Picture 1 (cartoon, helix red, strand yellow):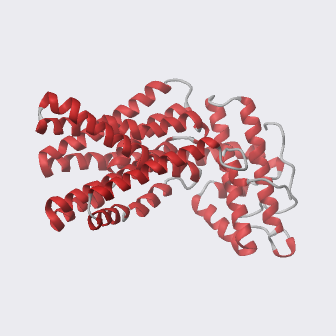
Picture 2 (cartoon, one colour):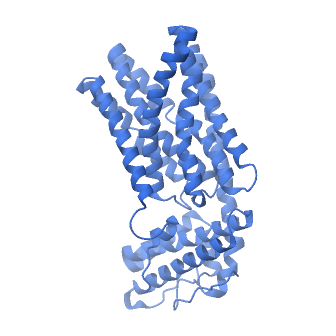
Length: 403
């Protein structure tokens, strides 16, 4: 059987060891995150720090799971997601701590006084600094990993990852301050507000930058205006939230309703983009039916999340974990192939890149299909429950020319 690295193909990277750029990025972001935790631990006593850390970590698994659910049809590379999260928890937090402090000390406090300086820092300085720092990793991904940002959903997912990392570290500080300022009662109020009522605040702000970056990655025109408009939207939403705090519960309630409506809009955009992807599956994959890699029944299966899940369960039942993994590779390879066609139609990739990438994905689908056959008892073709399939029968040779 052909030897290849399925995950490397799906991630759009060179098989083998991680790149030096990725290693350096991980080291820098992790070091910044650890340094921030060390500072928090030094500033507070042991009990205060660990209580703040525990409360900040508590909602993170739930929030991360909710974000990743948005991207089930075409999951983003784990390395990129981890890098985005660590950037938010490390580089963005360290940069914000330094720049916000310097901005207050040398700009807002001298011009407006101590009290008004704090207000100006919170409502103007902090949103500009923090959203720019969080958005920076999205700009990095746009520059180095543009082909992984296939649409609105990807922009939102990456934005949410960096924002959740930032919010987690920021919450540690807020919870520690709450304990020092008012004890348990104050801590409970802050946790309810930041951990339960508005845990998606930062992800919603930064999602605006993610939308701009997604547009830039998938269109040939208007890239810079789109990115700048997205960043401006993130700053505005962040400033509105911070400014509303000055008006107490009523102000926060108004902004909370606004953010909730924005959340519904983003979920609607994700829903319609997913429907559009299903339409693209039905449009592009039929051209590959003559290759034997797919059948009309496979195309129907690939265009429905529940049927894809059922297909993986069927593969596991007839061939074990290896077959389930092969089915997952097959599904993701087919989805990446459709997205590749979409990007070619949009004119954001070159024909040579399309041809090379397409050959890799077709090879992946062929090898995954072969692995499914070899994992079955007796290695006999078994018709899947969704009907006659390209996943039953001898493995074909993928075509070398665009159909």
